[in-house]
Image 1 (cartoon, rainbow, N blue to C red):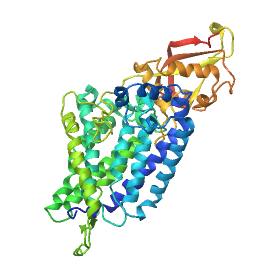
Image 2: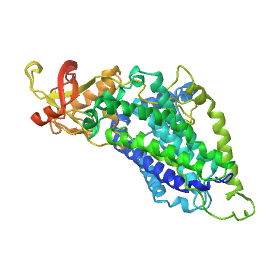
Image 3: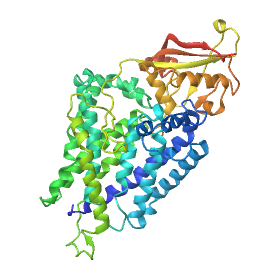
Image 4: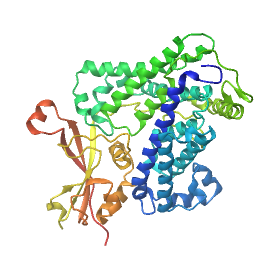
Length: 491
């Protein structure tokens, strides 16, 4: 680092800008494909109803986070236009076109992505109630101030990315230490690969690894989340201590975090959470500058930073110092909040995940029948795109794409309300609603209306190697109870 210029972190800037833009591209694509059947004008939780409620009083407007749709009326067509515009801007940033201009051009592009996606997530209700939504928003806001190729990365913004990664990783580590005993006795990952929300193609193989390996996984996780985040800030010592060692220490810490996240990518589907963490970790990957003595700055420039740009980035830094006070308190609080925002703009948030690990996997299986008598009916199962269903099916690789319906299905056996969105979902199946059916992998009735539907709970366990060889199944399941139904359309 060279004062206001993070000259060692040009690679980090390139990965941050292009990687965050790529994640926005995926997020807008996910919304384009899923928002309308879930939250659109005829969605399971219609966003227009939420917006009408918010507009009914100033107090309610303040309860809703900022969204473009409070100023212009929501329509599904406008949602599509917003998603397409976001994807176009994000693609341009991935290619690097705005970065060829002055720093204000990529700034406007990233701020457009940030506010555009906030306009969607703010009305997304429970379908957008995931920590990686606010993580993407905060990362997009900070990426707006990374500058362009014409000047070195601003030191203050690179450090703010370290602070974001610190809150993400250290917050998750503290949630685990304060959470379930399984993280302290090193048994958490003996269950996690099997019971995680959406297993991937290699999750079963990971689950079948020996107990000593799972204990090693937990130890590695604790090192990655409780020790490495502090080393991310080692390069700051380079402002006073010459030589490449401080930068190298930060790079090693980033490499450990990246390696841990890649293992999670291989063994599960957590939307863009793991990929976002990997991208953020590259902010600490430094290549020590081997250039000669720095040339004198041209007028109105300090350390290669144009003075107006330096003022803008410094202002962001001061803003973050003020906004981060609640987040610092939360990290060291006995009642630590997980995935919490302390301001309407979702900046300087608290993060964390999996403070406890479920020991048993219960899945809700949705079935329908064309028979008149449900007691003697032959029931057929609806297939979901990501969540476990057919015991023979290999769990697919979905991430970094986000299947919102499938994710929320995981929460139903854990006590989530059935009336909020699941009952309307069953009603849509009875209507054979095409947009809703498009969210699924298979419709056993090929677009026809079933006579009855029901929801049945099963316990799922990964098949051991002998069972897999004998029966060709990946899961072994046993039926528990009927959760809802049989249900039919009224009248």
